[in-house]
Length: 99
Image 1 (cartoon, one colour):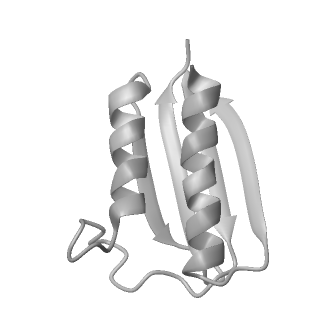
Image 2: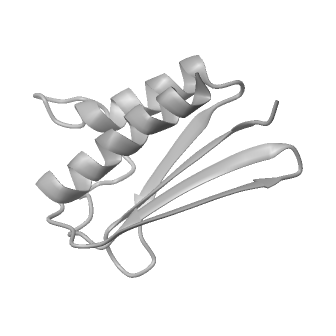
């Protein structure tokens, strides 16, 4: 089921990058370190205003909340961090315990 969960979260991140950030590039990286899986996605879009506050308000932030909720509920020890990318855009990182 991890593959399906990651697919759905990645699908949401791609959709947000294209639709809201108008990104033209999307990079992914995955690795395992010290028993923790890392799934990182970075785009080159316009970024997110107030990236720290991604709670739904007036219909905004629903996709970001979905990603956080799904990871925490369905991946063992799962969490999502969402931040501005190093060169603009958005960086989404999912971490969860390796099986």
